[in-house]
Amino acid sequence: MKKTLIAFAALSAIAGMAQAQSTVTIYGLLDGNIQSLKTSVAGAGAQTGTIQSLTQARIDSGGLNGSRWGIRVSEDLGGGLAAVGNLEAGFGLDTGASNAGGGTYGVAGPAPLFGRRANVGLSGGFGTVVIGRNSSSYDDVSADHAMMEQTIFDPSNTNNGNSATAAVALRGAATPAALVTAALPFLNARNTAWLGYATRFNNSIKYNSPNFSGFSGSFMYGLGEDKTTAAGASRMISANIKYANGPLVVSGGYQSEGVAQTATTSPRFDNMLISASYDLGVAKIGAGYNVAKYKDVAPGVSLDGQKEYNLSVAVPFGATVLSAGYARSRGNDFGTSSGLGVQALYSLSKRTTLYAGAQSTKAYDRLASAVLLASPTSSIGNTTTYGIGMRHKF
Image 1: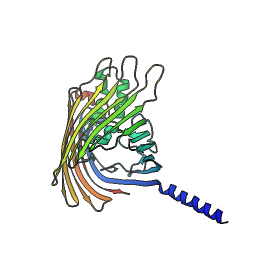
Image 2 (image 1 turned 45 degrees about the vertical axis):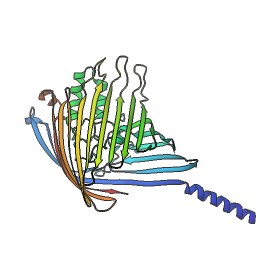
Image 3 (image 1 turned 90 degrees about the horizontal axis):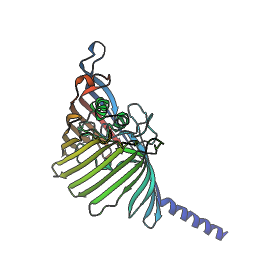
Image 4 (image 1 turned 120 degrees about the vertical axis):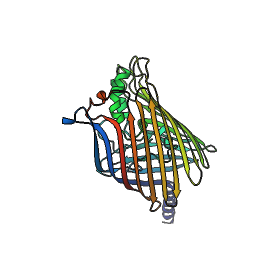
């Protein structure tokens, strides 16, 4: 009996130790807002052939951050090694519907349940390696320059980017002009000056390095898994390098989003970003420069790159933070777009924030307005947003 009790006590202790070495964290974020959204759209019916203003009142989700919930797991394997995993689902707070958030590159139809993130891997002194659906390495540093933190009021917000649409246009474009014609109405419909990019990739492997005296880096490769007898598989490459030391942050990011290769072309959409920010104490300032370019859209032909700039500042006043930003995107093929945004954040607690803001973005196209009016969903790219909302983290 004593031996049995001792064995049982030992097993209980081992089980307790194993349980202590494993963690499961449930977390989430709820973000909803009331908006007034004004856009310029192609007229219909008696107004066909004209540009009309359309103002819509709406309740929307994700003013500061996309609403989500997730599960994060970690198990200590000993020797500094740990097994890690993350499942994260996005949803619209206004409807309750699943929402991958930030674009769903390569995914058609309804958003997947864990569309924001679904991965498993190992973490240790070497860094972290995971496989599955991941946020891109470029996206991890995309907000380093944005003191408005890529909210809906940030004119350089690229998380509502156009990449999924661009991929479709790339597949169907026989010439650069065909790509511009197909993609321009969708590009102009966005409420951001910068073109955008895909924030997440399926079937990917991602590596995050440890921190070396302020330096860190990341690399991700996405397998297209769409190879056919007539076309090679697409591929997605994303990488970053970052230096963060005290008030100074400098980072760079690169991302190449490819679509299925043909015998003569390997069409892709590339972004290259350089960011810098500095915390002065009384204010935090940031600047970013990005080049977005469609490459190899026809045999040996690429579109001129959009040169994109952003300047922003954030000023704290106790529990309130006021910020403003200006963004611009300019190129020979897609013309020029620019935007200005302001916002105010007020922290009710560490987890709950009230916010309000406004943003105005305008696009000036190189194509004739007749091209824009050819589609009932096209616009000349003028968008004005006013909104108030609340974010709660748990």
